Image 1 (cartoon, rainbow, N blue to C red):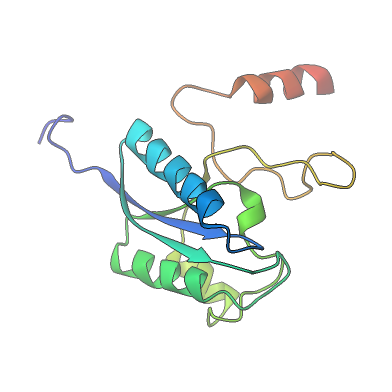
Image 2: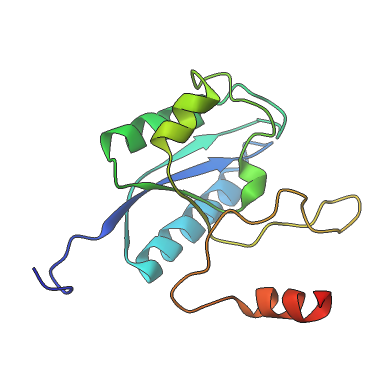
Length: 147
């Protein structure tokens, strides 16, 4: 099988927002779809948790996303940025161990956002690995400034 005929890798999208603004949700969905298209991913489905705070562990959409990844073992979890992941264990997912045994890769469309109160980079950092094009310009600038 040649590279041109190889099957594309699957991705399952997940969005978590503290509101129910469908225009903003559709915009985030569009970002995931465009990123998948640009990077050659087959976006299987996008799951959304609406009216959900970052600290809220009740994430039925995330549980469905993890279940979908379990049915597509090569799939990665695609999120707009790290702020869409819970800060504590999700209540709808049986355990962190189960989550990590199913979800082997998380890719973000955008770099981690700055903390809103300090504008400092998120302490969680980036989850996605450096892609085939190498580090992003922002990553190169950050490295140059840090030493």
